[in-house]
Amino acid sequence: MNDLPRQRNVENQAEGAAFAPVVMKFGGTSVQDAAALRRASKLVKRRLDLHPVLVISALAKVTDQLLSAGKLAAQGNEDSAKGILQTLKQRHEHLVSELVTGDESNELLAFLHQEFEAAEKLIHSIAAEGGFSPRAQDHLLGLGESFSSRIAALALRQSGLDTVWVDAKQCIITDAVHTQATPLWDDTNERLERHVGPLVKAGRIPVLGGFMGCTRDGIPTTLGRGGSDFSAAILGAGLQACRIEIWTDVDGIMTTDPRLCPDARRVPKMNFQEAAELAYFGAKVLHPATLLPAKRRNIPVWVLNSKNPESNGTEIVADTDESGRVKAVTAKRGISVVDVEPVRWLAPELLREIFEVFEKHHHGLDLLSASPNSMSLLVSSTAGLPVIAEELKGLAHLRWENHKALVSLVGEKIRRRPEIASQVFSSVADIEMRMICQGASERNISFLVDESQAEEAVRRLHKIFFSSQEAQPEVVQYQGLCQAGGSWQ
Ligand code: ASP
Ligand code: MG
Image 1 (cartoon, helix red, strand yellow):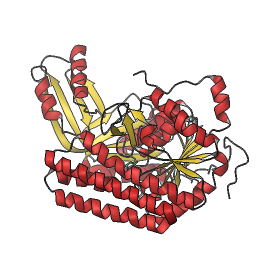
Image 2 (spheres, helix red, strand yellow; image 1 turned 180 degrees about the vertical axis):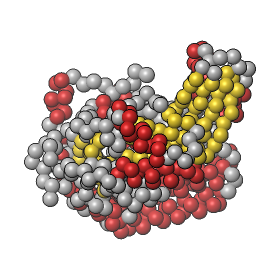
Image 3 (cartoon, helix red, strand yellow; image 1 turned 135 degrees about the vertical axis):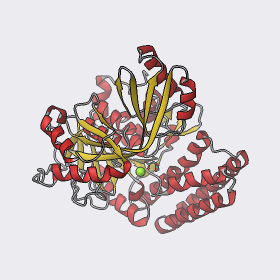
């Protein structure tokens, strides 16, 4: 793919630098109700000197509810699907009534009314077709961000901020891979320069819905679940932001899931690769693709808590001077292991064929391990496997086992310290490992266990690597910002 973010010339960079904005992304729980939006307004007011650009997720749980509505409609249960829409409509109207007044409120309510009517029509056509196509799914799910971003733009405006709503569908131009679209970078950057850049320069605060995009032909797409983080990074890269802030409801990236280990701690700082691996290996805080555009442009990303803004969060940067240290332990559930046994041997042409068949069916592969006579693939969905097995018949046999979990330790260069691996494997010696993943990366050690054993493995590992460590030195959050003179009260 040659759709990498466009390299700007030096002149543009110099011109852009004066307006290097801060992209602030507010997740679902950070905009879910009036109290959350009031908090968001205060946070944006603290950033005024940094030219904020806002990316807004759907209100908490809305995307899931839209998805259930679509599925119910496809199963012929149109009334229940419409019931969900009604409840959603009331929730959004209530939020408007709490935060927006006057003519603007009436206009917004009229807009919501229209959008919900369109949503009902869509539900009706899904029910009539008896199928929920990926294209219809993108259309329906994107509405969540359309509602929330419109409401946030006006609510923040009436709280004294000079916000202006910008249609993300006019800015984030993607391919047509519905439910998992990828931006067409040149188009997107050009649109951002056209629709968002001038507003920033004029001192206004653009507000965009996250998660959604649009094809060149104007068909709505989405960037994959959790994709608002990705939207923030796309905007950050396109606008040459000085930083990207992901405002969520936890104190930052944690050493493990706090629900599993109550003594999980915030990781103050990590590098892009560590964060990407963590996201990939199951930490829920960031969308795995988020960091790529930020990394390419070397834009620091902060994960911050909108309910506890005084916490320092996690800073993700190109380089940290720590290495050889375990940063976090994760478990990725719902993994299946697919054994591929070639009819003859694992020749390079066969490998190519196998990957092509998986790709053709848009079937992601998580990891693989190979020996001359067989290969094991890890996948997070078995949906396409029967068809793939059928296509490869005659070349290889496929067998798969479900309900596995991939337990991973992540930290720059931890592989270079053999004592870490030996501590890991001795602490889980009595847990059966289906596979040890010797991937190409030096920054993770992963192994596959039965899902039922995953929590125990994570707890033991967390105890070894984090219960005895001294608290890590704090990084002062607002030092070294790209622009001086901000007010950080
Ligand atoms: N609302 C979308 C989702 O829940 C995108 C996001 O919040 O990042 O997946
Ligand atoms: Mg989210």
